[in-house]
Length: 296
Image (cartoon, rainbow, N blue to C red; front, side):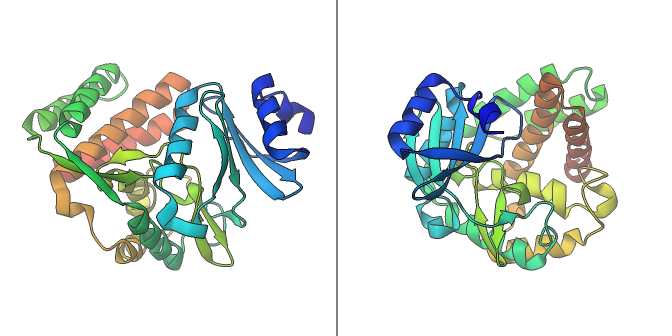
């Protein structure tokens, strides 16, 4: 495995790792196999570390910025940045011990979701208010609607365009957001949760971090984002626990909540179709149908 994992890294990335870490060896390849992002756990003389490498710089740039500007409120409940070079597409963080919540015994635990809500409330630090978020989001939604032609029913696209036309843009307060906040990016160690993977982090309205977990875990069991996503569970109980920990509900900002639900649903369809992930594309269609049913 070590030889195949090393073949994923560029000569410059290998040079930097040797300079930063001294002697090391690959313990595990943790890559998802998408977007050309490689994730490796390395053994070093100082203990295990995680390396993320990509020839596309944007993911690594976001990861480095998140660790430098956003993750401090999480303390030891998030990895610590050790080294980073956005130009080389390389970042090294400390290893957060434990196992992923997704697929583990705590995936449908109300205590885990309460902790996840508390951690997200810590992470969501406000930065600045801007009038530009809504217009940019509406432009992106129009682009997604155009690219989704033929991928979702025409009646749904008309409904999306109607809701977008009725949306009244207003200034939005931007927060530090994770970008993919759900159990596949939560780690538990002895029942204590931590948060990993900040490659999609950015400054956005706080409700954007709630869309994915709402559709995957809080929808009614027969109405979940995927038909084969684990055992039957009480989505309402998970939702109540999460928002008890978080301290507020996205219904407080209905317009922003609707806009980001539409964006992420259509964006899931379009992105998944482009990369050939048919199961995720179907999940996006279910998300869109649910959003339109809820918001009408």
